[in-house]
Image 1 (tube, rainbow, N blue to C red):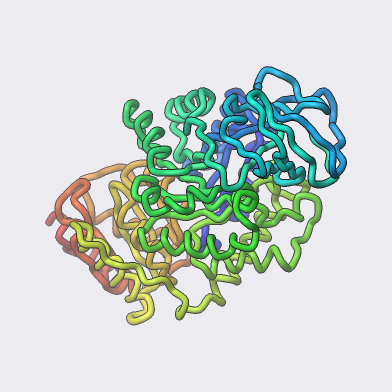
Image 2 (image 1 turned 90 degrees about the horizontal axis):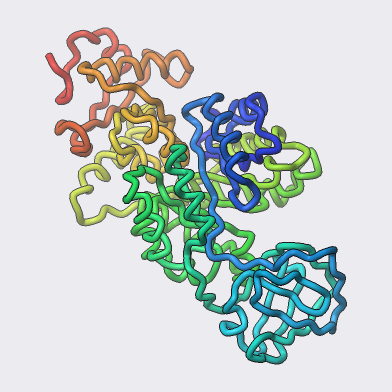
Length: 483
């Protein structure tokens, strides 16, 4: 493992050869993101198949569109000047013209008010509503800009009453279930119900897919506690968030959301423009390097690359750069800034307590690695939340559990089929860690497991020397081992 913080890389069906994915994986990529807004099912098939060919350990994340608004197609780019006036209508079937911008949401006019702002194409075009009519809005253009086809529409501070799931989202979720995708990242999550709408579909099909809630508007920020109760984790999608919310507020929001995720032991991804300049240039800016480092100092689980790897000129260099910056930032982060993870008053207290002690043993007893076997991945996620310096080696009994841990900080997850010998799991893990150079026979390791069988939770912590365990491999006894 090159670093503790995970990397999510967006892969396009136009560039998804196995050699390409393999090169990114070796450079430090942990999760492949598929952006459903720019791909069809044939493209999904290519990316998923080639990713699985490279490694069964790579997580696959399907990004759904969610309740977004876009302009309709335009025959050609339309140039607007400051002060121009243009009508805006909610008519998905009509083409956008110089005289009338049509959007994909039919009730758009009803939701807007006179004096409201409308930001198109990630804020490149700013419109102000000067008159509201029953069938259209009359808007004044606030800056010189050119409008293309199918551009994003944001309306800061306005509650848009779109359904959380489009028909296309539903089709993509069903596709993800059929092809055993690991995560669904749902765009523009506003409240817990938006997450539950997807969870209901997953439950109907008995799918283990995990939901990542993309936070990209003020409503999502305001409802983050409720959202975190039902989502597997969150993505701080700073692109649309930076349009919906004043840009100067984004760093503070990012820091608060990361802290909440760590406290609730949920994985968190920081996304958008991490290395944006590397779409065209072989080297990052100093500001981008600092941005990555600060996300790590804030204690994020994962960082995401978008255009840098989807269509940029230097995709491999972008992943390599991010890996180097992550590794250096992890060395220089201050323990004084660690986030205190509270114990919650429920039956998971034992797991939390033992996970914390295992992580503390890294500094107190110089434990080099923490090993846990896992049916659900919960103990490994708890270990990740405490952000220790030791590698966490998670032995998973299901391949999908191994891949869901690809978003968790510091977790090196492997799949091993169930067998009668639990002792062999520990010995195999130690030999693998020795072979990979993570530990030596002279090191101490911690082992977390449970005494109550499948899904029974973690109930004990063992700390011992690697050599002692391996020398007594046939007779070494723990509560889960048979004589």
